[in-house]
Image (cartoon, rainbow, N blue to C red):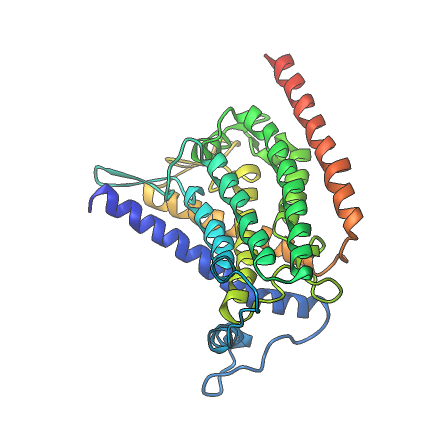
Length: 360
């Protein structure tokens, strides 16, 4: 198998995992909200009498969206109207190509980097893809020939731009500390240990304020509660009000894919990515002197498993936030982004720069 085939296989595998995790979240969201609200949750859909804890509801939703009539409003720009959900969906899922899910896997003389696209500007690539998603949101509202949808798309664009700036400023502290925007290099840099080998050099320990700011801004970027003003159906008409069928489903699934992407970014930037505490390329080395030798395969497998466990934690946290806090008013949303989060991220950059200079 040549290098092109391996990269193609990694790309397909990464996108397959991202897509299916996002689809699985439709069940997770139902069940977690039911648990928090003391309900049973989805448990009706069944196949031959088997309900599988409500897992078949995701299949039922998919079939319903495929079979539902797709309506294009009169006067709408058909080309842009049909293009908008694809833009939101494609750019959200393509960003996963630059996420490293594991260390180098060595098979014979071949070294396989478990990253679909090993870019030395991976962080910029991901932010570029996330920024392009705003075009799908804007076009969805503008092309619908609906004034309410147009207002919803303007709300969404203003919100996403405000919080993308904060996201970019929040991670500058991480970039300054590790001196790289290559995510695989950044993850490996977090494998160093401080305090006599006890504390891993993870971003959450070196940049705690940056972690909080990035998580808050990234949650707003996904347009989910308490930042779901662009699509709050109960009292605000959203940008996809004219969409039905699978095109509506693509907008909905894009938000869940972005949730997984945020969890992957938080894991990569602040929790060491695929790093496992005290696990080195040759096995476990503990600060009290013990050592457990492991081959490359088990080491890489443990790293991949750790990566997905960390992602699962952040997904759980984001779902908990989604079902705990009420929706912000729009003025509160913009004040938080422009007057609190952005200044705090700039202060974090200045403080980080001073500390780095003093340490040198």
